[in-house]
Length: 258
Image (cartoon, rainbow, N blue to C red; front, side, top):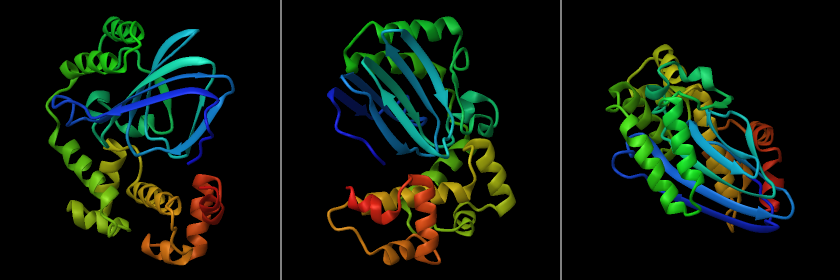
């Protein structure tokens, strides 16, 4: 949503996972920085879990974040690096072994959640020991691949449904998702709470706001009334309120600063 020009080095990489991780993982990413002034960026996260390993002069740590329903703010200071595993929607639930609602809007230490604490610590040390992004990705895939069970069919169905919601612009209401998933609304709500950690209505809104932000940042942004209608809003006023509440600026102001 918002990021200044970095006052120093900011080097980012993002790669697709190998075949063994692909059913579970959307992408792996790495950032290395050396900045004179704090770098602050804001984003609207996708409806999926993420593991992040952070290294600074004070040491390293590894956290897992559930679905973040508000704006996510990242602050980079001094020198450091981050490595991330962004999961596909619904797919972290098989590793968590509990409802994803318990992780919603939370960031907690990974600890022994995926593997023994000793194995997790060994992975963290191996990643911290190299500055090469490709080697960090290879070490991470080698750590994670043996921990992934065969994808559970129920999670796969929800994963595919949520990913369809991201790209299918005709899915603007919960009833549309019910029809596509073959579930009544009550069953759909339960499935999303368990596997995704957010409601179907929230997921629809998040993807439509992603779409709105992308169009407003384009060289020729659309008229706001037409954009609101295309996203399923009854009127422009409702769209303006939702956009400002989540993004922190009105659609017009956001487009003006692109």
